[in-house]
Length: 320
Image 1: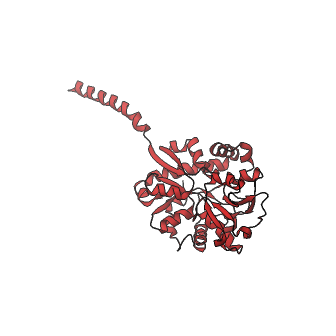
Image 2: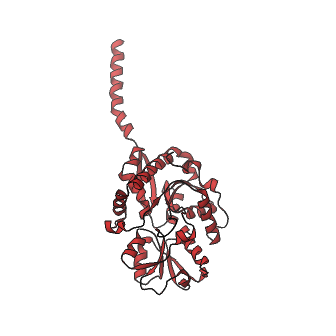
Image 3: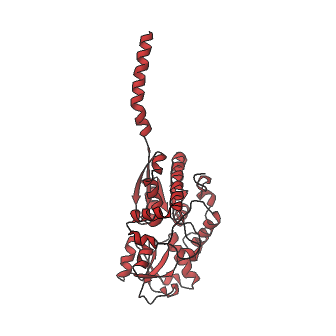
């Protein structure tokens, strides 16, 4: 009997030694949607620096043209977590799609220059927002927060916003459309803002994020309430990895520039002159409230957003 027990123990040890490495290597698959813009270099950094791997996450990235497309994919179950500017998520929640904040990624600057700029051709006679009456303006999406910010600036300038011809274009298509004269102005973000300015192909007539709500939350990551209820631990791991990426990028500006170039495909010299990105994941509810009010003023929202439902406590101070 003693010999039998020894043999059985030895057999179990062999089996456990065989399966233990495979169990340790198992990772949680996570599908994340985003746009290839400079501010989302944070996701690239989290991958390249191994922060997702440290948290046991196998992250698959899906790219789209705007937050509207990504939230549609999120709603259909094709994505677990999706980028969207807060205004898009606010609108989604208003029409009944229950999404909540997972992680705030980026803020606008408090004063110019900024990533978000309304650009016209360098030789355009247009020099102010008020001159956009009857003109074609390209947006990444109608009804988005960027669209609302531009409209808000137009309203403050005394322009009849209904006199502007608005159309949708992906950020990557905007510079070409501007140069070809297909549109009169583009509501751009980096890296495209800096690329157009540095190439002397366009000039700024409005820093629309700064001029509407300074320091407003821009990029953020979202998930459905149902997914969050079932995957709270995975969401926390994502936050921890992204928070580490923020800390690294903010404390290593030269490495951050290299990563922006690698992620966006820009030349290093183009990134060198780019406005620094404000990677900040600490949620300031008053600024979110101001964004909600801006969306109501421009018709993007019908009523105030319940920020307590939109922003879970776990998303307010990630990594802490």
